[in-house]
Length: 170
Image (cartoon, rainbow, N blue to C red):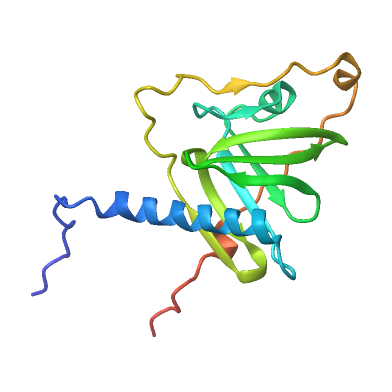
């Protein structure tokens, strides 16, 4: 007679939190490297973040288009990529030909992938500081000429393709 496996007891050691922290540190190091050295070869990053996270600053037109989460691609045309000592990412990107600066706290990042390396991470948004503002900030309102433009189609990227899979048991 075999016993059915039961759920493991809850841990009194915060392993999951430590893993999330370690994953975020990998993201910080990759972004810092890219900001200082550029992206070598075919490397490029997909970065998914919560747009409703406190401290996120994106143009109003993007927030309207992506009210909860957004994925950006850092490949050929980005500028001023840096992560400051408070672990806040700042990067310049163009959306529909309009240059924009995005400010993203590392805690808002929920996905990171480098398809060239077949590397990807999935995380939960980190807990907010008590002193942080309650809502994400919206940058300047779009100019009237921008409102007439057709919005860019959203791109959805599944990170499952970048996860390592264990071979099926025989």
